[in-house]
Image 1 (cartoon, rainbow, N blue to C red):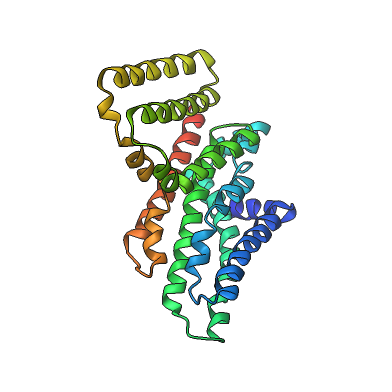
Image 2: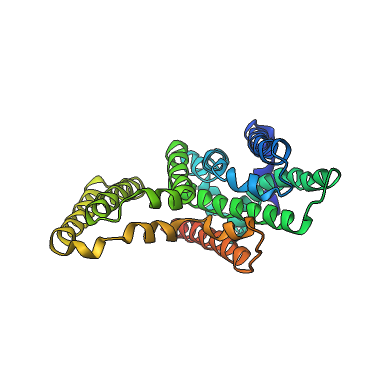
Length: 287
């Protein structure tokens, strides 16, 4: 595991990707810190961090798109699959390399509250709780990107799908408030989501016919439900989008309330997607 971890980390810093990730990450956060904390005089860094969560939609695909997809494309994954190294160590090594990237950036951000404290009163416990929660959000998103990258041999497809998934989870709460609660709006929304899932299934299964059949069956069932019992769809979109939002749990931390469920929630997401990556690689080992 240590060898894989070092290899992946060196690959990021021997190329421009790792440096760009850290530079853009700190640039985005620094911009909002300037606007909120320096320009407007807020002493709490959580406001700036909560406003910059969309940065994950741009930067997570950058570092995760190649981590497994490139191995699949070059067939070097076969060397890993036939090696005596357990699969979980491969996944853990790659994931920890990703976590190290964001940890380096977050270590710089940890200096900000100490700088603010030199010029006024700063609640350091609240500030570092917000920073810790922001770091955990990044860890959760990196695990999602790792899993998506393990499903394909195309870096471009892995980047696009990771971007879409992260963007949806970032904007879910806001989008839910904009979508009407009518059955027709729910039918259209679910049809679009089902179409995107069908495209993903086509890329994973490499079988357009099977993906088309699954999409057609699901769309027919959804349309029948809308035509016959549309009232069941009413008001369901905000509830569904609320469940896929990863940022709702973090909002309490921004308001100064630290809950134990926050680290449990984000660490559970990271564990689940790392486990799914393990299962996906393990399936290929025995296929």
